[in-house]
Image (cartoon, rainbow, N blue to C red):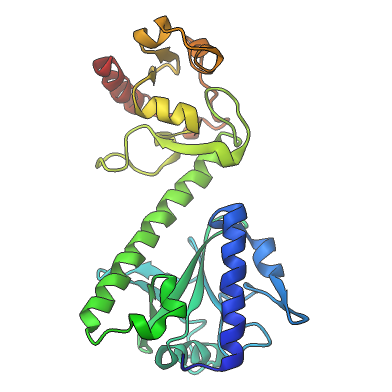
Length: 303
C-alpha cells in the first residue's frame, strides 16, 4: 500500500483488534471500549475521541470517523448509495479535514462508527474516503470488503464502475444494518432487555421482532411495531406456532397444544397459552393493537 508504513502497521493492528472485539461482543461496541482501545508496542491506541474525525497521537492520518444520530452534523446517504460525511467545522483547510482528505489518494482504510444508542456504536471497516466536496463541506465515504485491506493489489480493477458498484452495494448493506441495530437497541431498551413472553434477560439471546415485517410498507422500525423476543419465541412467532392477540394474550396453535414432546415444548411453549405478554412501561412503546390484529389474523389463517 502507498500510505505511511508506521500508520499501516497500526491500522492492521486496529483491524485485528476490532475483529476480536466483534467476535466477543457483536458488531455493536461500547464507547468505553473504543475510547480505551488497546496497547500497541507500549502505546495506547484509542479508536474514538472527542472529535468525530479521530486521529491517535501516533498516527499521521485519522483512524476513525463517527456519526451520531440527530447530531450536529447532517451525515446522510446519497442516492448513489454512499455516505455523505460532513467536515469537522466549516473550514476545508482545518488540519483534521486536510488529514482526512489525504486519505483519498493514499487509499487509506478507516473505521466507521455510528451511534445507535447512548454509548453504543455499530462498527464498520474498512471504509474509504472516495471524494471531497469543499463547497458542500463534505466527504463521500464508501464501505468495502475486509479482504480488500490486505489484498489491495489483487482487488484493484481497471473498471471504476465495478469498484463503485461493489462499494455502493456494501454501503447500502451497512445502512440496512444501521436501521436493524438501531431498531434492536430501541426495542430491548423499551422491554428492559427481557423476552416479552418468558422474561429471559440475556441480551445476547434476544431479538427485536417485527410485528409487521419490515419488507412491508407499514413495517416501520418503530418500537410500537416490535417485540423483544428470545430466539426460540421469535422463531415460533415468525412461523405462526404462536400468536399474540390485540389485547396482548398469547395463543398457541391447536396442534402444538395437543403435541407431547418433552419439557421444552411443555414449559417453553405450551405453558404460555393465555398468558399476557410483558409490556413496556411507556404506553407509546407498547405494541400497536391494529398491527397485532393484522398479524394475529395471519396466525389464525396459518393454523
